[in-house]
Length: 408
Image (cartoon, rainbow, N blue to C red):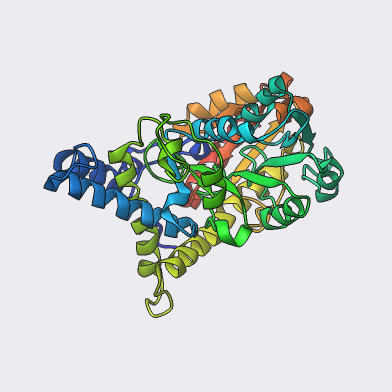
């Protein structure tokens, strides 16, 4: 991994600060910033008009959403719904889809998810929807498939589950879970916010019905997207004006339309992952965009495993520290979002000491409130979370460990 090349793509990394709160929001590619400016200067008009600049704006956005569809391996650009946040898009989905449900129908949520993929579903209890909770095994901190099977019934309409916990860092086997859910006649809605910065998203491979993530955690602007299978999006009611037709997808889920300049800037992200492959690998090996995306994320996974292992090896060596999640850096089991608690220190006090080192980490529940409550960690002010990404360096991890050594 050519870390100097990678870091050169992120202007904020020149500011002599160590960013390790990336699960809350990554740093932004310089190319996305440039594309925002480009759009506002050269095509900042309303879409759908007959004049030249409007046609240019429409073409730019169509091309970009096509690129995004390829990036996640969707079949059609209309399966990509753009919105301000994953939280908002999931809320819109819950409002729209439940109009086809009946009192007594069931939704399963987990106690490992960010509330974005929980509250929008549990709020439906007011309408008579029954909510069941798939709880993590408190011993191994894993979601067990057998426990899910016990919760499924002929009234189950949907499972809402995270792809990777924003606290545990654990990667859930979404393809396997999807099959179990579909065999039971239900749908699956996956929160990929904590997964997408680290691994290639492939909605067709996993056969998910709905999948969300936030671009501002995938090196872009404060924007989000939701994938939905086209037949499902078409068949459910929208949330836009009354005159929109069933087939007006995704616009019927985008009241007020999507943000044009931020959407256009997403091309900076897809281009980056193409360039990452071109820079590191023989071009004859990676010809198509999809091959380049896969190759780049393989590089990212390998490199992040090194970072995670270095930090976890240190944390595991401290008797008073408990890792909240998988204790290894194994790239097949976790992303480098690492949480822990200390027997003698509150999480808040640890983070305040690390603040002095010009290193940004964080403490709290990270909106995974049910998990922190069920693990009885509120008294610790939640967990300490260190969330790394591929632009972090081994030297930065060494500096963090040095900071911890001043405390423990």
